[in-house]
Length: 204
Image 1 (cartoon, rainbow, N blue to C red):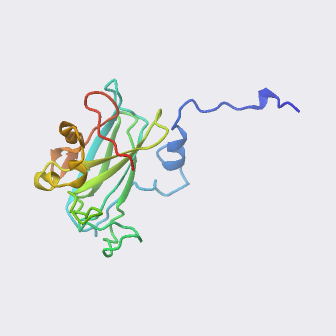
Image 2: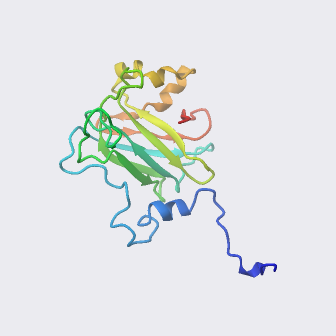
Image 3: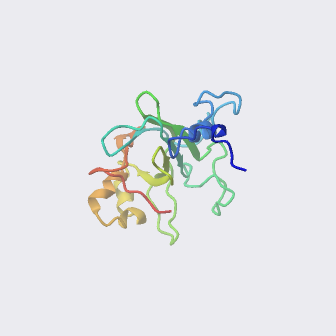
């Protein structure tokens, strides 16, 4: 039997929204009662160890416009360089540090903000130390598969110079797209999806 076409409901016109925000940040999407607060909205508390920092940025499209409906997640080591994960083999991470955060970009100006701590150095798989860094995951309309990149710190020049991942970027000038602006404790990190300033994205 042929289904009555009038029964079909309207389908979403965006590839990664608006359901990303409804499902992952219901309070932000205006749907209270699912969680007391959206998961990932707080990474630190009063007992968290380490240097407090703020990372503010935007996700910018190829025309130079900030996306006002993107979603950004970050994860990182704690101040001692340990991940808050049962798979962390080197010891127990700070129990007062989530190590993971989620933030939708502002509907007003497209900014995201994370209150976190400066991460410690983490060994690469061959034992070499990586520079302090924060890993980013970005989804937005038009992005079917989340994009991965990293933030490195401008005041870690010596550590950045010996970082195994930064060293593998063939076009050296593009490594700068992974280094935040600003200075401690307030860092700025814009993510460019296309164009001359396109951020280096990682296939992980």
